[in-house]
Every structure is written in C-alpha cells, then in structure tokens.
Amino acid sequence: MAGKRGLIMGLANNRSIAWGIAKALHAQGAEIALSYQGEALKKRVEPLAAEIGSDFLVECDVGDEAAMDQTFAEIKQRWGKLDFVVHAIGFSNKEELEGRYINTTRDNFKLTMDISVYSFTAVAKRAEELMSEGGSLLTLTYYGAEKYVPNYNVMGVAKAALEASVRYLATDLGTKGIRVNAISAGAIKTLAASGISGLRDMLHWQEANAPLRRNVTIDDVGGAALYLLSDLSSGVSGEIHHVDAGFNIIGMRVLDEPAA
Ligand code: NAD
Image (cartoon, rainbow, N blue to C red):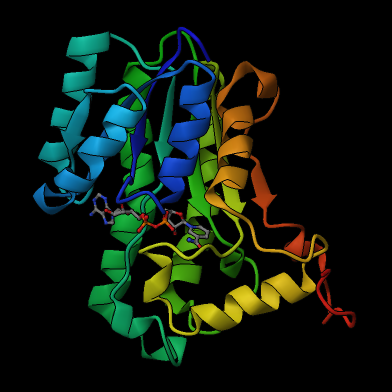
C-alpha cells in the first residue's frame, strides 16, 4: 500500500472495525485520513490517529451534506487524489433493534437508510472525482441482510439495500477503474453492535456453529480489507465478501462442541 492514500470513515474507538482496517493498511505503508462523527469522539480518535502516524483528521457527520463536501474538499486540497475509501458507518435507534421488525417507525426507517445506506452512495459520488486513476471503495455489511437474524430488524433491511448499492455503484464506477466491494463481517462486540439486543446470543451461536468454531476479530476484517483495497484484488468488484469464520455457509445447528 506504499504510496496509496485513503480515507477511513467510522472510527469511534479501538474496538471499531475501522480500527482493525486502519492498522492493517498502516502496516503495509498506506497513508490514512480519518473522519469521525462529532466533537465527542475527537479525543478518542486523536491518539489512535497518532498511532498510525496520521495527523489528517476530519469531523464528518454523514447525514450532513455540507460536512461531506467539506471533508472531500479538504482531501482534494491536501492530497489532490484518493486511492481508497472505507465506509464503516451504520446507525439505527437502539429501541428498534429489539423485538419485532414490524414495529419499525417511519422516522427510524428513514434515518437508518440515510446514515447506513445513502451515505455510502454520497461518499462514492464525491470519491469518484478524486479517483481519476482508479480506486477502491469498501463498505461493511452483515449476514442479517441475507437471512432473518433476531433483533437486527431495520438494520437488516438497510444492509440488504447497502449490498444492492454495492452492485449498482460497482457498475457505475467500473469504467473508471474504481472497484466497489463490501465485507460481510461476523458479529463483533463493538460500540454499534452493543446496541443490538441479544448480541451475546449472536456471538455464542456464531462461535458454536461457524466452521472455524470461533468469532472473528477486527484484525480478521482488517486483513480482508487490505486485500480488497490493494491491487491484489484488481479483478474483484461488486463482491460481498464474508469474513465470518464461515458462519454463512451453515444450514443448521452444528452438533459438536466448539474446539477446546
Ligand atoms: P462502531 O460503533 O465502532 O462504528 C460505527 C461508526 O459509525 C462509529 O464510528 C460512529 O461514529 C459512526 N456513525 C454513526 N452515525 C454516523 C453519522 N451520522 N456520521 C458519521 N459517522 C457515523 O461499530 P462497528 O461495529 O465497527 O461498525 C462499523 C460498520 O461495521 C457498521 O456499518 C456496522 O453495521 C458494520 N458491521 C458491524 C458488525 C459487528 O458485529 N460489529 C458486523 C457486520 C457489520
């Protein structure tokens, strides 16, 4: 990744998937800009940025068009171009990440779709202008897009739309040499995931039934992201790549005990 420059959006703390990705990219020589949601997160993000040798921090709420414009204007001014963008952002009101999906309100449906889905398209639109030599865009999704997962509710509907966006964006941007992919990560205990009711059950079920009989880490995701953001995956676009210890291939409860 030496000589490549990219923006990672969605770093909240050292448990964030964005952090696993940032570490993996930094280890391979990438130059990284980080965006964070609001002033409150700044003090958490600053020391992490320093750890990966970055002083390029931008505050950006992706629900705010002006903030998005400002973020990409700053990148244009400082770097002139971009090689990759990581979108590790999702949001839904916690009260609706439990119980029945049918109770989702119109307001939270719109908010969830706006922050978790539309924002990736808004990012792609702005990144395109800075990727005249091609590039790689990556977002994060979850298995609840494909199958019913208890309590995931409107987030599952949003992730299904996000995965469809990956295919449309990949085709829109393909002629410019810009690749668009998603990683479907297994459940990991992060700030965002803690808002989902029954996360402990999800983690336990996954660990007991995934082919690798373990949960994944942010470093597992970081390794796969490195591949998708580097030239190693030059022929890959529009892909939803599972990093879930194989959990998605299982059709029924696995009967043995997790490996000791
Ligand atoms: P996290 O809480 O560390 O990261 C979520 C980030 O989204 C935070 O940095 C938060 O500030 C940001 N965000 C929310 N609303 C925003 C807004 N309006 N503007 C800008 N940023 C905003 O949790 P995470 O698990 O690392 O989540 C990263 C991505 O990975 C999300 O898309 C999530 O859905 C996805 N994902 C997570 C898991 C999991 O189990 N943790 C599994 C699969 C996919």
